Length: 91
Image (cartoon, rainbow, N blue to C red):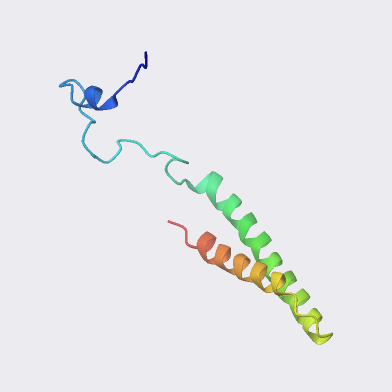
């Protein structure tokens, strides 16, 4: 005997008002951005990603001078740059 629970029956009940694809009534996954906890954390991440981008570009250029083509450094530089762009867009 297989017990199958269908959620479609629950959504079709008249008491369930959130059955259609309506926008949520509250902010999930982090909540509403606030100045106090978000700005200091964002500035720390901006600092870390800028240090990471500078370090990986320096490593890439130093390796390039001695004819080593280490592409992982340039990939990590690109990732740090993209995270800088993502993190600097606040709001």
